[in-house]
Structures are given as C-alpha cells and as structure tokens.
Length: 179
Image 1: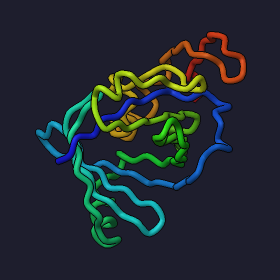
Image 2: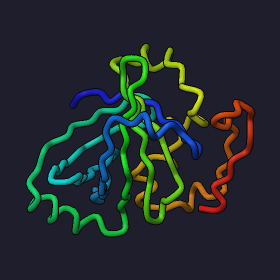
Image 3: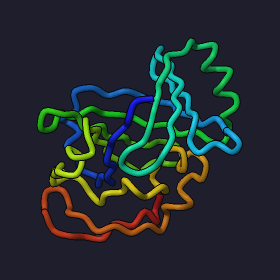
Image 4: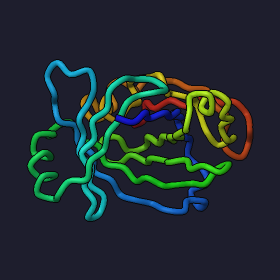
C-alpha cells in the first residue's frame, strides 16, 4: 500500500466554487469488514469504478485503490446498504497542488469538506490553509466519509466550529444544527 497523507477542513458556504477546474459526481459505499482495523469502500463516478482499502487514521494512512468493473461494483454496492455517501467533488488548484472540495448530498446535504493531499508529512505540517477554509477536522473521525456513511449526520449535528467567514475575515460560530 502507498501512504495517503492528507488534511481535511470544514468549508463554509461561499467558497470559491467558480475556481474549480473539474467536478465529479461520486457515489461511495462502505463494505462491512468484521474485525478489520480499516475500511473497504467502493466508488462510482460516471463509468469509472474503484475498490479501495484503507488502514490507519489521522494525517497519514495506508491506502490502495484498484479499478474494478461495473459488475463487481454492483455486487459490492449491494453489501454497502446503509453505509453510503453521495457527493460532488470539485478540484481547485492551490499553490502547485490540488484541493478537493466535497459537497455532500442526500442525508449529508449542507456538509462541505476540503481535502488536501501531500507528498510527505513535513509538507502537510507546513501547509497554510487558504482563508476560505474553516476548522481543521483531520483527526476528527466524525468527519471521515466512512463514519458519515454509517452514522449519517447524528455525530456532527451539534458540532460547533469557529472559523473565518468568507469575504469578511471575522470569526463566527457555525452550527450544523440545521442539517
């Protein structure tokens, strides 16, 4: 497996969506694996299908992704009932890299997260988030897609976060109570 080094941030409404270079619609489901210290997910985007295995948590994790056929995807998708997310993923160029912004749909509508991947943990530690990012949630398992898929918004409904409001730069309180 190759290391997956990324940081995750909440994103308030009003982020610069017009800067997105690519946008994909994703369906993602999690296959239950008893006793595993990791996750197995399947993802569909258009006519592209992936199976991914991921272990660890926090900043650095191990991940392997394998392309699969639509038939294999459908067979595994049936096993993910009740553990699914839908999201629109937009790619935004930033400082020589790419920020992936996930706008969740369905029962997770209203939640937007940004993910930034890095070549090394040192690069991740020195990253300066753009002003339109909200609170960092890299180490908060409630904001992992697998947790959202299994628990819906139950674990984040009362989560309160201070961040700078896009366009104003002032601290404000955001509550996901309305989600």
